[in-house]
Image (cartoon, rainbow, N blue to C red):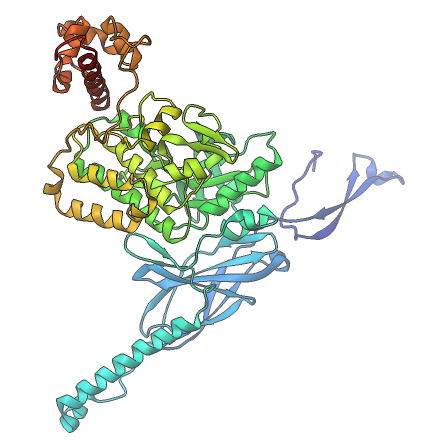
Length: 588
């Protein structure tokens, strides 16, 4: 070879290799001296092992015996195997078995049924890639009894009795077969809209080594299978890219979170913990983890790609474009995801529209499973206590005061998410300070119903905002309520009214000296609505006398574009009228 470099492939892991290089030219064969150098290299690890084929060794009515192979150079690192199988006609329900050898007999199968199988090799460093899917079927059940003759001999009644007995035996055998399978054998059982957990959430921080947690709950992906395309966001840990992941023969769209250069050990542990948490969840309304890159730099977390991004921004960009039924459908999806997490004994602590992602089919999925990571740069939205930061506008009173985070505090946050969705991404409590928000909540005030909010939905919000957490509905209750509303669309036609006894009042309804604002400009600036000054002037409302005589319904005549802004101005007018009347400034 003419060059001074070479790539050597197909090496075995954990092996010493000696490489000898000799420089040669046209007279090298004539010279007694040789220009030679040697070096020894130790290969610590190579790519994760992959099962290359699965073979059916034996076929029975209720069992199949399978064997599989791994490339010889990778066999030394294999410590065991994980087999996943399901019926071909129902791949939503599957079973996972572990084996120490490359052969296993799968029993308790149904006769004459096609099953699909995948095998994954396990190593001390984690799991390899799953094999391609293979299909095998059990033998048909042979008819050993002539039922016609039997019926003629013993009568119809006897046949019925035998069938009932047989049905009971089959049910009992199935029940017993399930009982023999331990919790490590069956991980999940899928239902039409969710994956019901058969185990509870495990806090990755209980692991002494976070690497062990991420290896247990997340698949390791080779960097060569990942292609970055464009930056779509950034966070505390680094940039987020849209990209593709080669999965078998397909390239799927994914989001790639990359840990920034110069990270601290604490950041690395938090980063891996987020992947360990996501890896435990599998539900239609919870963001799906594809895998991680931890054995190469940079570290990466790979999740499914959600085309429409964060829910709050998506709603603001599509203000007024959805029907109430569509918005309630989004809320139903979020509540279903939260019910799943609650059933797994997982408390989110930061449920907000910004942490809900939306795909191209408008399916909403709960995401962002790391509280502190979202809040570090949001000083206005958080409140610092001795135990860390809390997103005040979304957090239940007991969680703010005593740091008591439970599924009930997540239900309170879900009520705020409902308000965000129905107000098309409006900021909860608008420009009120955190202190004003906490004070108002403790005094019994609650957010008013958004514009055009169905009365039934606002009633559910108010239930979620019960001061006593025991009185709030469970997420299962919320799902059932939303299901009933969706099945009866006419129940969404009744619109909630504004009730000043239970609704929050904006703080900026008077000047700093306690007097009514002197100009319309002053008033609009105080509620952050200065951009609508020209609208008021064009409509003939140029003095505070005119403003105080407005009704909330008149705001739509002014031409305020966003429903949330209309509501904010309307409530401020109510506050002005209340103050003006008490001070005797104007008669309204």
